Image 1 (cartoon, helix red, strand yellow):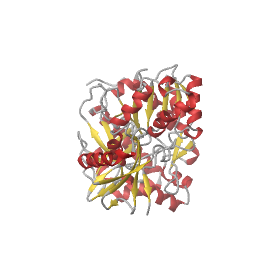
Image 2: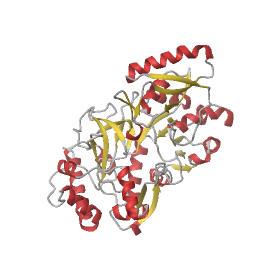
Image 3: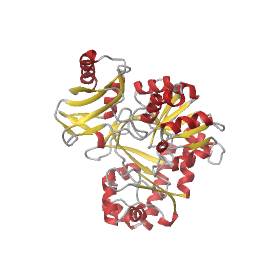
Image 4: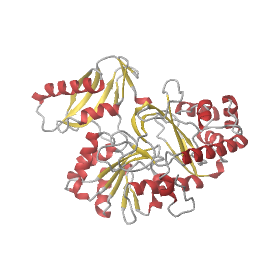
Length: 450
């Protein structure tokens, strides 16, 4: 077996070539055991959790033992701990691997479900993530001299200021415009600073396609963008959406996941390559029982991760709600290690007569009918999800050039396609072109009428 040259200037490339190998598995176990021993000795929260699970880090003999004993933590449990502690700072102090005074950067979620989830970073965390984003940049072909317009939300988002900081190690120039600046400023900044790389949510990237002619007097293809990296929501992994964005910009689109994944250059989407196996232990569990699932090609389940060296950004068998499919067979691009595709989120899952369906799957069907539809839609809920009494109601924007006399037939075509591909019975209603709200942040797929 090839040995990793740990002190080489090409350390990342050497390590990445070993992803999926016994060498990496042993590295993961050694790092995990060291982490758990430190947590057990220094953090009462983790000592109590391990004791209750019957997990002794001193005698732990395998990754399987860790997975079978240590419980999964989800966002609901995080919120409960926050309430018990009396605040996000107190919760972070209890659960991170170091004293709270070591935290030098704090990000958070939007807090749409109540209290925001904090993402504390120590100096070491920033160094690790900067190294990982250098890998991301290399895989996406981003090099010194490139200019990146960063258009994720900057206000406390993990993909905001932290991403700006991490990307600087890539050698490229980062222009932190932020989604909050709005489409006009984003487009004018790309134009004025001759940026050739764009980071943002798929909905923002699509929104700019609509806005560019009115703002800069030309289509987005005139901007000179060569690389687009999308994250934060479904879209970049949906063939119809990928094709629309790549054709409009004349650029290569990469799908990026918060689980340290990035799609590759293969013409047909192969999922996201996990590019941090030496820093994260990735598992699949049953979404309902949380029991470990076999990690094999084509397996689907709830993604669970454990960070192996991070201090503030500490995840110990934690899930953020992504239902994924893992792919372990070799990829045509030649990169080692496993890949994963995000199927949907637990929070967004709907059940229609026992059939599970996610907004991303619905988006794929609707996008396949462009340009007869704009691609914008809302799932209309009249009762508390996940249960939906058939038919599944979907409001869709029709295209500008589609006469109203053809809408009834088009609705039947979309309904038939959804029945065939998703095995659910839908009811399509129509919205006029560009009447549904657009956002430079994450798209809200649901219209809640209950």
